[in-house]
Image (spheres, rainbow, N blue to C red):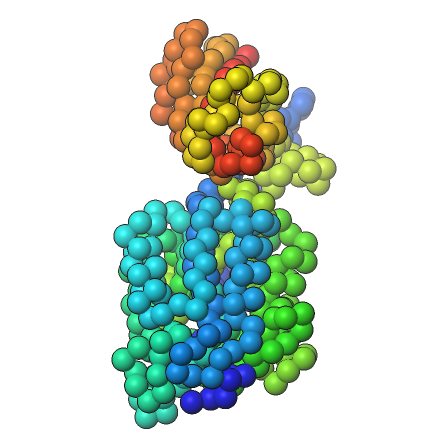
Length: 425
């Protein structure tokens, strides 16, 4: 067994195959008189889906040397995911046994929605068995020379293949795991940033980022964290872009770790896991959509004839005093009128509205409900002329609309509000 300051690293490489598009000759455009309408309808935004995290940190091994930093690493990482990246749920397992880890993986297999994103972080001991060429995570009840309580690379692959989430990213801060993704190199050719994000979102992904290759890695490091965990935390805080892939993040982490130690972090898809060459997308603040190229409406886009989607009307939620007796009755997850929330609800982006089937003028009077993350979950007519046959189109569009997370006295709650939208000419 490796010394206390060694950890097991799940080897990984970058995964994305981007093909080149053929170029076609075009006929010269005919000259036209008068004013030309240069409006180009932007592509629809792409929803990201909810984010979940399983974060494991093991210090207090029962039969193996204890480690110094994994609990601190895991706790800081879980807090960062929630505070800066809006993860819907983070399950933090400290000093976890084999049964604890498998119970969490089984729960995710049975409960996560297909459009979700799951991040699994493991910090603790690991082992590479040279006899079988198999790599293992070691939970706190693992014993030297007895693999009954170890978690093999095959166990990890089998479980993440069965988890229904569209995107799964494993970040492993331990030693010795070259057997998991050996020979999985794939080159990548970045596209325009938003186009690249959309492409990575559209394909299923099962990727791993490790603290090193098939080698020992260091337990201690800077600021109470391992060298690798410190780099992950630092660069997740410092990334300039609001949305980016794990592959975008990785080069900074690799350089930050390799420049300070003999470790060389790795990034790869997981073999035999169901990966389809997508990637995990981080979204700062939990923003729920990624816009396609040229959908942002900046000055450059306007010069090229691109008009951004029409903004939704403001949410009319003026803060009112709490009526007597209401406060103590409201619990986490309850439905609370937006006028009683801790802060006003605001839209988190600019969203495209569905088009009317005919050139008519009509006001949709709606009641919208948002969940604890600010995602629109229900839309109903509030009065007036009904939905004019626009029920399906409005509800489909509303799935992309998102506000800031509603809270009442510091508790995450659902909320509802009135919204009037004018359509037509």
